Image 1: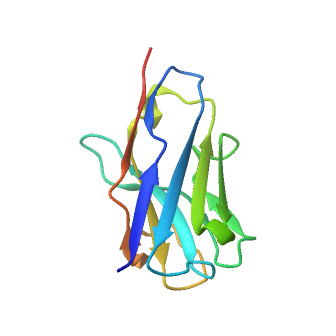
Image 2 (image 1 turned 90 degrees about the vertical axis):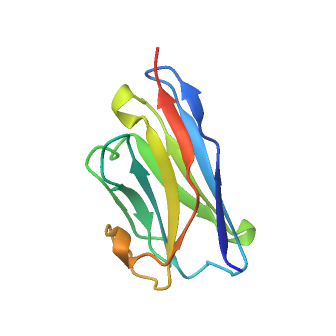
Length: 124
């Protein structure tokens, strides 16, 4: 059974940093595009960042550029999202997703597997 498990969320002060992890099991995701999405209270799920299945090409949302970095460790079947300069607008549940295709996409409907999410709260 395919499973994605996020971890690393928590509470942080504005300007702080967090690193989220997404551990995959049940399948090797080395050639899959993998992405991070987030959903704030009362808002739709939105795209954060994605890495193509070749682990070379990445794509970020405008608000994530320069602050967030997506990466993956194929040997560990794990994806990461390093977040810095966090602000209150980054407060959301963060989800990882995997697509059964190497090409990346910012559209949630293109992803086949989802984790349960991890809460990130940015507050002073």
